Length: 185
Ligand SMILES: [Zn+2]
Image (tube, rainbow, N blue to C red; front, side):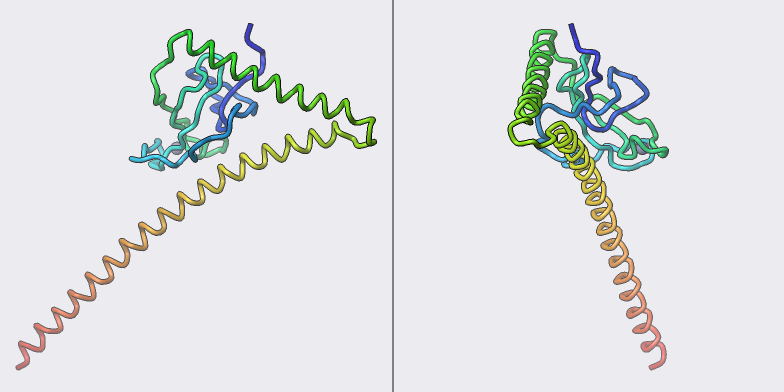
């Protein structure tokens, strides 16, 4: 049967709706695309571009969904929406088997490293724990970088709009000035 661990792609909805669990088991494979690398933007209730994640829960392995980019913060508007239809039972089982196989191999690898500890007197347990911590930090860094990039894009958009307004105002001023001069003469 399924393990008791909660599986979820990084941004977890703690609401427990739709089979999206909580916890930080992480995806078995690295993401091919960043959570904001999609178009057109799907807005959450905060009117911000939603992050696109992949669920690795028992109920919905490999199924993509949109989620508020403020998820896991107090400002989370709790928006989520499935992108893909549910997979046939066979595919779900296959994906869960693959997920568990990857996780099993990772665990086994860690244990082997720890077993080798006596060889060189290193505290492998600590090293493995640190490595896991680094992995989590790395994932969080990707999330934050993506969010920052998204903000940069918004600022650039606003800059462009602002420049448009300024140049429009300037041209209006010039044409008004022209009219004045015409009236004077
Ligand atoms: Zn939101």
